[in-house]
Amino acid sequence: MVALDPIYQNLPREYNCSNCNKTINSPMCCGHPMHLEEHEKTIKWICWMGSTCGIKDADICDETEIKIYPTVNP
Image 1 (tube, rainbow, N blue to C red):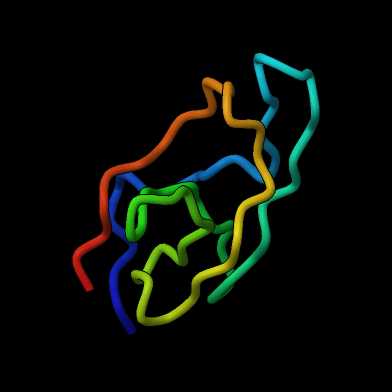
Image 2 (spheres, rainbow, N blue to C red):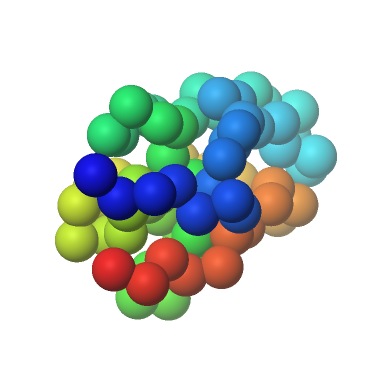
């Protein structure tokens, strides 16, 4: 089992857009919430184990100030 990098511990289960006030529920992967990360020049939901494990499209506002995490090294 891979140890969970401290930056990805206690990830939020929902994100709030500061622009449109929409609440976005984080999808789950490998028992933890996915996080938002830039992937191929777009923002995607990424598994804490990296994009090779889990990746999903993120339906977020273009003007949001949601926290984007650094790229996970698979």
